Amino acid sequence: MASASASKYNSHSLENESIKKVSQDGVTQDVSETVPRLPGELPITEKEVIYICPFNGPIKGRVYITNYRLYLRSLEMDSALILDVPLGVISRIEKMGGATSRGENSYGLDITCKDLRNLRFALKQEGHSRRDMFEILVKHAFPLAHNLANLKLMILLPQPPE
Image (cartoon, rainbow, N blue to C red; front, side):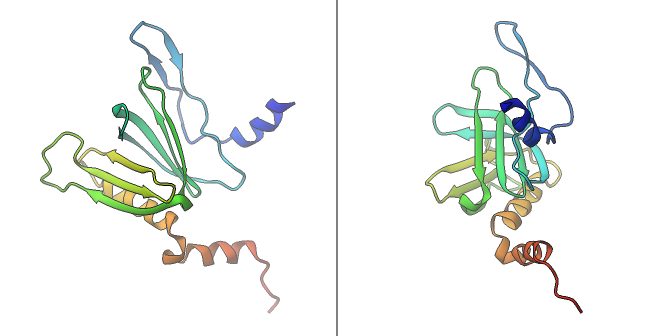
């Protein structure tokens, strides 16, 4: 019975294809589990990033951004990591590095959370990967500043008859 209710929330995946990983000891594992979503939670974007973990160092992963949360799943077998951060917990988002940044993992985003977490993501300096992710996070983490809250209320509340 528990699996029936769980599948209701996991029926829509942010991932489009199955991902298979091979660990150092040659074991193949399918990691195409769906990203758990809540009712009404909608996918916005996903990107491959390097999470600068304060405990284990750089970890390659895939970040999924929905209208509710930032969800990171590591792509490395040796350091299985999942971060699940509600966007309402984010207090500040800053760009780190610039177009002339030379150091490894020096170009990306630095996210400060209200629960004292500090998340650093390194991104590739091609296209507008950092700008796109920054704008999406700012827009959805601070909805009042972007009139998203009013839009959501207009959709949810019944409109008065004209």
